Image 1 (cartoon, rainbow, N blue to C red):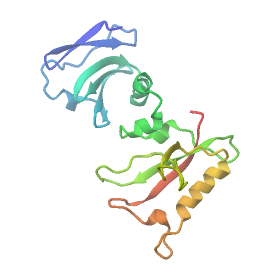
Image 2: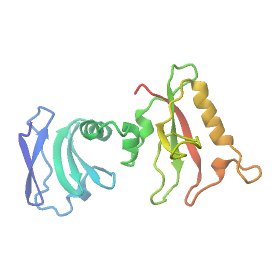
Image 3: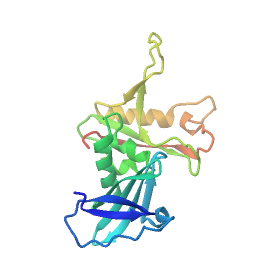
Image 4: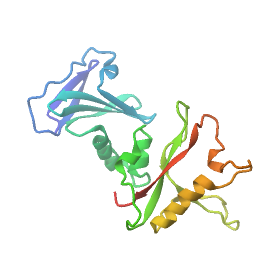
Amino acid sequence: MANLTININGIEHPIYNNTGSTEIALPDLAEDDCWREHATEFVDNDIDSCYRYDLGNGNSLYIDCEQGAPSCLSIDTDSMIEHLRDWWSNTNDGMVEFAEWLAGWGLDGLAVLTKANEGDEGPFRVWHEPHYPGTCNAPQPGFAHKYSTDDEVVNPDQDEGIWEFATYEQAAAYVHEYYNEPSTYDGIPQCNVLSHGQAGADRLTIVRTDD
């Protein structure tokens, strides 16, 4: 319920208070041209951004922005990842998995996945974490995707979506092949033939699909 408001740099914004508490002290952002810099936590995906202000007693003020402008304000006890999960649930059309969506915000998608163990029931997926420290526009972490290799299809190498492995052994075979596929260089696996800015092969993790 939007029963609170806050003035941000001269503009009044409603706040959705999801805590039920009325004893909340808000930060003073009324005449602060640098209000973004004073946030406790900040994340962005190049288009949208989110600023969290610690209000004490486990409460946080979240300011969601679209292209830099505040679009939705709320007070909650959620962590940043929990807050973004709600955002993802309300806006995502099922085309992007939550873990990959988090990676687009610069957060650890693997943190919301469950690592698989041999003997678990499938299906399984493989999570790739590229290693490009400090490189602009580096590949983002994400699931292994399956690509068509049928020469008869209209678009060879077409992305067929996230690769799901029926058994742990199939997923482990994919990981083994990634780390051991030979390259055109004698004795060097293909995964160690590095691209510009790459500091090492991807780190691969077999995860369950029941999250």
